[in-house]
Length: 286
Image (cartoon, rainbow, N blue to C red; front, side):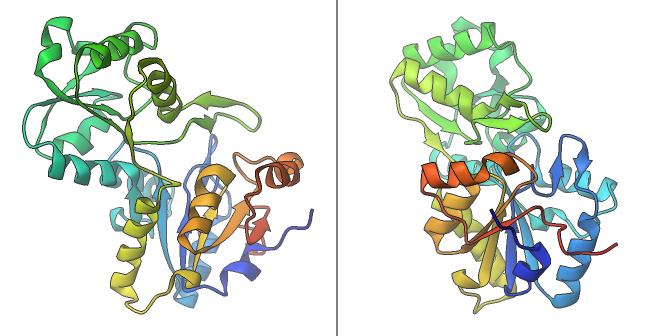
């Protein structure tokens, strides 16, 4: 399977949407050499944003990771997270009441920014079930997987309410070959058990790409979808989402899709990226 240098690919576009994990960073940290990629984009006047299904932290904290690693060009304004979309939904649909969440205290930022009271599932007692107006799946940490997931299931069985999944990722890589269950995978399991439909935010849903597109058009009012490149490491979120939205897509082999499995996965899924690159640093010299 032939790959292209990312530098050769990206120069044809006016804007780039990057996935985060597996594209700009991995389990070791920032992808080495990524600063050269951003210097090139800045020099060519190519705009860029980070589209992430990470709802565990607010945009300031997410951007802070890059800035601590000397990637100062990634500011909070460059971050577009699924948590932001969930927050907008909560603002418009949940006016009052307490929202229970599965995740860390930091992830509750998105709910609290909507002006709502929150309580962690780990702190929720059965006597408080009736007070809960909405349940939000935010992060795969911050709770006991056995006790608290069972509590979530019984809360949903006993209370009719809105249920939001703020991160649709079902897994994430923890090293070069292994993965771990993400909060989207937990939500899928619970949904199957309780036989109720949850509201989901994040790639591959079009709402994520529309939100990013609207942000990009603030700088380039005449920007067309086919002038944007979506770059991701996962066929079933980044690539199919970008394809459906009408953008060109580039699959990178630095994350979820292993080089030795890429061709098989593309053929078996029918999800075809416009470009395949080793990584977003390929073609850039130090």
